[in-house]
Each structure stands twice: as C-alpha cells, then as structure tokens.
Image 1 (cartoon, rainbow, N blue to C red):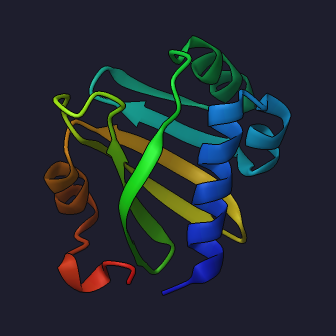
Image 2 (image 1 turned 30 degrees about the vertical axis):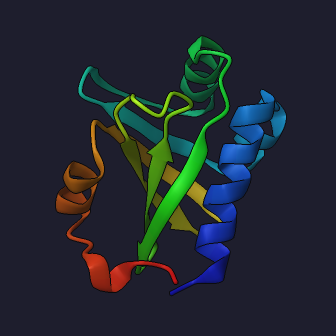
Length: 121
C-alpha cells in the first residue's frame, strides 16, 4: 500500500471540491484519461471542461482500496438515501493518469481487480 498514491487521490478530490482547477491539473498527468459509462476523454483541457461541468457539491470519500498504483475510492453521497458511487484512479509518480467513475463500489473493484484485501486500514 502506498500512502503517496492515496494522498494524491485525496488531494485531487480536495482540489475538485474547492474548484481549484490549477491544482487539479497540477495533480494530473498531461494525458490524463477521464471516463464513465457515457464515454471517455483525455488531457488537461478535457479535465478542466469536465471539472467545470460538475455540480457544486463536495465529494466525500469513504473506504479506499489501493494496490500497485491503482486506487478505488468510495464516494459517499450528500443525501443519505442516494446511491454510493466510486471512482478508480491510476496514480504514477504522484500524478493521476486516469480516473474512471463507476455507478457503485462493486463495479469499480471488479474493473480494477481489487478486493477487500486491498482495503486501506
């Protein structure tokens, strides 16, 4: 488990929550890949566009899983009745190189082949 990878992802979420696009870009590789069920995009311009389109809510993380540069972060909804989602990150040299949003934690874990043994304690 790498504290550095987790710290990078947490800093990335902090920058997103604060709408600090310069820090978000600085924490991301030049060719960052962004994806979800609607498609994918790549690069800093796409990241800025994506971040600006996000609703003005704070993403709170729950459980985090990490193994070999892959981090899955559970995303807790502001509304307790809403669906818990998750994102899978690839972190290389303290930069996010890819982030893919999943509709639930199980899907993110399955896509990355992470398991409960990879849960950060």
